[in-house]
Length: 173
Image (tube, rainbow, N blue to C red; front, side, top):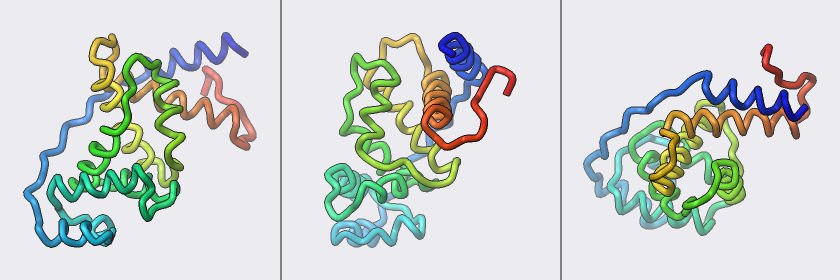
């Protein structure tokens, strides 16, 4: 089992490596900032653009669970728009993964909220985690694609170990 686990992780880790292009920060929209100042999350659902200050305010509220539940956090971090990307970057700035192994940092990160949603949404959250991990550990030999691939492999192996799955992952799959 241990040898199979090790081979599977290595195989998945080097199977693919990909870099994500960075998204440009959009111009500020005062209407969105005003809505977020009073606590509305309608802007996220509509995908409107907002300024960095509004993203910082929402990220702080999400981190402190100020008016939110753990199950709400991933929904706000996983949207595919400029504002949600800013919120995710700001949210992750509250975490310091310096000196941690990837699995330790991932455990710390996932303790703070429930990672739910569609595969693409979860993948976006894990991509933000990978970027932050590298910011906290600039001297690591890994690049962003390697960290992201390893993170996804750890998530798959964790699901295989603890989930109610009728088959286990192996090198053949």
